[in-house]
Image (cartoon, rainbow, N blue to C red; front, side, top):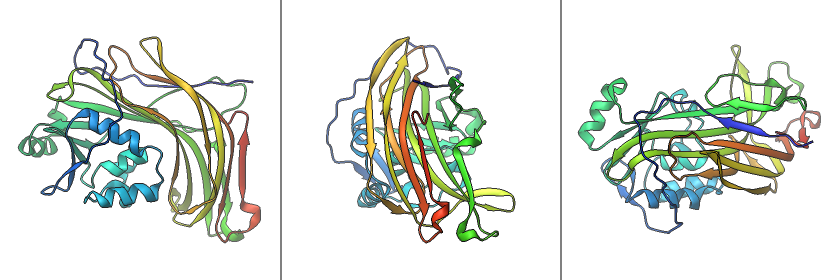
Length: 318
């Protein structure tokens, strides 16, 4: 039985705007680096979009290497604090955003803080915004929704940004059967979206959006009654396939099939499996993803007992 997952969000527009579409043409250009602030500087929006397209299917290790080659310390290379971890950034953005939560396009500096992406046109303005973020009107609302497995009888319809979490797509266990070492596998779909309505030299005038959907595979450990990211190495393999459609203004903007297969992933940290992303402009509407994800994820901790291995499969999974 075919099932659909709708991911959408309701966010107040910052101001009214006219319809404007930003066409992305994949191009390859060398990215300049601001050595004074260790911040990536893209010459224009097209170059930024092209870089996202270039990096979106790379592994964490490849993104870490790319980031270091650009001379910055990005979020992909550090353990995220709650301040940034709660954004649920796709890995491609973590490779671009520096540890101060910044990158730059043209003269406009983007800074992420407390659920928003702020825009500043100078270092002085950025300093002022950081001191008074609530007063800034040039900002994008950043929202993400974590979607887990639901029953076959449910229509999988969720609102981005809500805090609900379906626990049925998780598996708890005691590592090596040690009652003091409680662990949890988590498999989830994350819908990440940025909405902004600003007017400046590179964004132009219009309601613009970046949206990405990916499957995240992670391991957590329990401490003092809270679940936190675990650092053990894991063996993960997956075979996922399905369909996606991005809808805006009542029109199917993009649609297609995806097929993601892996060899054995042997590393620590979260694994992100990209489904699709889109970086064009939208007007007078909010994007909505329609997904069907089928297949299996094979997940185990290196050195753990075989009985804790989890093969999570479904037609569909989501």
